[in-house]
Length: 304
Image (cartoon, rainbow, N blue to C red; front, side):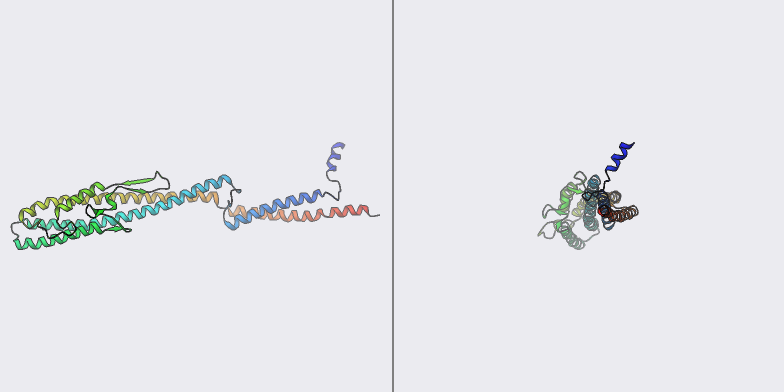
């Protein structure tokens, strides 16, 4: 078709004002340079997405997942700190249990008719010392500078109030723990078994007589049961926090993997892209150089 050929050729007329071949070569070189710069940036940073322009949707998803990972990592530390606090309290109650057992042994021995009054006085002295130490443990055990156990006289400790543990990255992921009722009951029992479980107390007479010692046996047994209940609750909560920590570790690992798949560069593929862009840039530069020769062709037409 002659008309078609004429139209086709008209786009490539020789002109000193417009060098279409050079314009095409420049455009191709610019495109190849842009691709090469992108590949070099990705290979140097290790990230496929370095700005929202690279992948707007992917960046938004990765940002949300990264924030979740960060929150879960903090929650993992929370569970470990909370477990340490509960273990500190449980250890203190372990000592309380040992002292209560010894006090019950003393009361059982003092209640027997074979014990002389002098013996009971010596037992009472040891009983008083144990009462003082009970008060010391309950009022001075602390964690992170805060009173942990406490009693009504010395002020409320952390365990004397309901607690909320933050165990996840969202506001709804919490764990409730409350032994305040058990702590109040224990405080009442400890005050009943020893006059020395109070500030500025003097020697008591709880096991100074057979009858008094006998009445202490059941009260000490009740105190031991109450301590056992608190320790059981502490152990159960610590075990739960341990499981929470393990589950969080699993979620963090898999979420980080998801972020990596979105954000990280594939070095094999990107290296191939870089080589391709380099070759295209070199070819475009060579063609740009060749396009300059067309101007010389026009000058040759003007020669006589």
